Length: 76
Image (cartoon, rainbow, N blue to C red; front, side, top):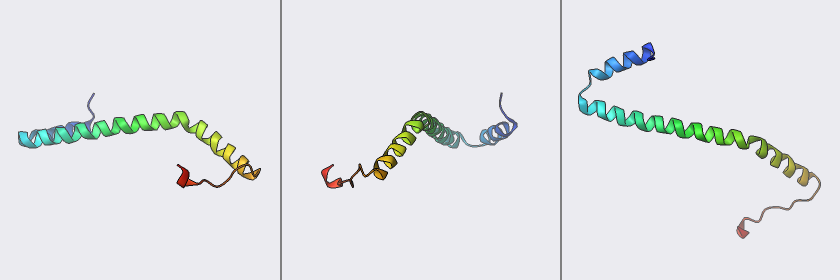
């Protein structure tokens, strides 16, 4: 079911020349693809959030116990 807001937008689009309608369709496809991509990233991060928090607590514990050393980024 289409919302009233979307119905209004569709009526506005109908008044545009076909070239502009096609440009708008291209933009909407790209925007929807971006939304889907963001959703996939959100889901991926949600699955790893607990692991990340655990690793952060582990690193804090090791630092507090003196079991860590500064990272030498030149060795990467």
